[in-house]
Each structure stands twice: as structure tokens, then as C-alpha cells.
Length: 393
Image (cartoon, rainbow, N blue to C red; front, side, top):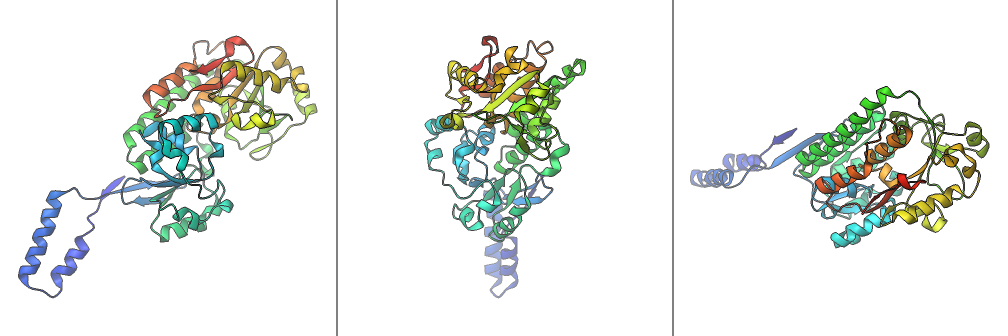
């Protein structure tokens, strides 16, 4: 919803009713009317964020502070100069280092975005946020700890929008992405582009959902999150990756873990012996000898990294691994606005007979061409077998 307000009306009224000659009043009225004809009225943007809060912005935001560095990818999908919109953020460690390097090559100012807080409210402060002179604070997901900071920012004239919240747990991943991107698009004056992307995402999910109506089985899946030297940290019941596996026609063996994530024992995993193994990782695990996939990673290096991860311990004994149904995806991609690419991988890997023609590589190429200000280059998903390789070059 967009409303229009004219700021000088109150000042004009005071001038006309105060002391002064009729000639002065007439002159002021003339100047005001000329001003209306000379330029457009200021557009006030009104949005309802993911928490249900009504938020007003005097104009499209140009100086955003955010607690989520992955917002850079969201902005890149709908704005031609995404780095220029970010005035401050939490440390960019959640950004794939290869992807971040690509952004810095095209937009050198991305390297100079100051760190002004953390992902969690306990690591942030209103004073640090205000030091970046923002006109909008964008938070990835609502947490009660943000309330005090939001109120201080509001009193300083800086609005806050939440792109997601626990109340969205009933929404599908497609709907969550669509809601957050539409909110962001309205806030920066790119509503049309955001709506186009949201529609694209919904169409990709709908294609998979329709075909899965014919699925005859739901294979068990081990998600080995941040795959490294110890197995296996797995998404829990309230984790959207668990939901994505379910929607892709599978069943995560970690789905009964209370909360966001937890640790599965070797005995538990071997006892179930899942049909499909999917590891997540990224460049951030290189120093730990973990799974490395993502920006600027080539196919050979990604596959070698996956082979190393599954060759260390009991993982190599799993039926999924011995049958070649072992895969890897970028963890950063899975928690970004591009998570539907990972969803396509899940569907293809769990039900190859239904999705023989589904090509996440082709989808990424289309995204790069239609939306991304900085095309994603690298290997963001990989299979143990040669035929399962997936890379964007």
C-alpha cells in the first residue's frame, strides 16, 4: 500500500493564520502552489512486515543496515546496484566467500560496508546501527530480543522491517521467500521486480509439488549439516531444511529432533541406514577439512571434498553412499532467497524417475540471466557420481 502525503501543508497553514500582511500570505500561497506544480508530492511507503507490524517509510530506502549479510543476494535479485543499498551489516561471514569476492569485483564498495552489529540481538545495539546513518533496518527473522532496539531506532526516525518470523511456520518455503522478497522490493522501490521473482519461485515449487503427487515412496534422508570431521549434525523439527526434504518427497531422519538442529549418533544413523545422504557445506569449512562447495569452487574440487567427507568414518558404510546416492549442497544457498535451487536438487535426488528432465543448473543459468546483478559462478551442488555433477561456469 502506498499513500501520498504533502509535508509543507502544516507549515503553510501556520504562515497564513499568523501575523503578516495579506500580501505576504498571498505570496506564500503562490509559492506553495508553484511548488506543487513544479515537483511531485512525496510518496510515503506503507508495508506490513512478516510480524504483522505496519511500517511507514518516507521514501524508498537507500541506506539499509541489516543483521543478515545474505541480504546482499536478495538485493542482487531485484536491484542493479545491491551493494550501494547496504550502509552496514553484521560480519559477512554467512556469505559464501567466493560469492562475496565476485560482488567485490563488480561492486568494490561492498568491501567497505562497515560491521555494525551481529546476527543476534544480543550482539547488536541501536547505537551501532545508528552510527551507519540508516534510513531502514532490515532483520532476517523476528526475535523478542529485537524489541528494545527497534523502539530506540523508531524514536530516532529509523523504521525496521522483519522479513520473516516464527508465525510464518505454516507457510511453505515458496511463500516465505515470496513474502520476504515482496517486502524488500516495496521498501526499496523495486516492487515490480520483486513480484516477478516471487512469481518465478512459486512456479518452480508448483512444478515439483504437482509431480510429487505421483510419488510411491518417501526415501529416508540423512542431512549432514556443515559436514566435517564429525558426523552428524542434522536439521531438527523446526528447521526449514527438514520441511524442504519433506516437500521434496523424502523423510529426514533428524525430523524428530526438537528445535532447530541437533546431533545424531553413529549408532542411530547406522540403525536407520538412510537411502539418501546429503551433506551441506561451504568455503567456510575449508580450514577445518570439511565439505567445500560454493562460489569459485570447481567441480573436481567439490567432488573430491565430498569424497573426503564421506570417507573419514562410518559414513562410507551407509547404503546411500555405497549405492552412489550421496550428494552435497551449499549451506549458504539453502538459507538464502535462492533456496529453491537446493529444493530442486532435493527433488531430483530423491525421485530421479519423476524429475529426469529437471535441471537445477539450467534454473541457475536462467536466474543469472533474468535477475542476478552478479551471476553466481561455482559449484553449489555436487553428486558422488559423475552424472550428478552440477556447476555454473
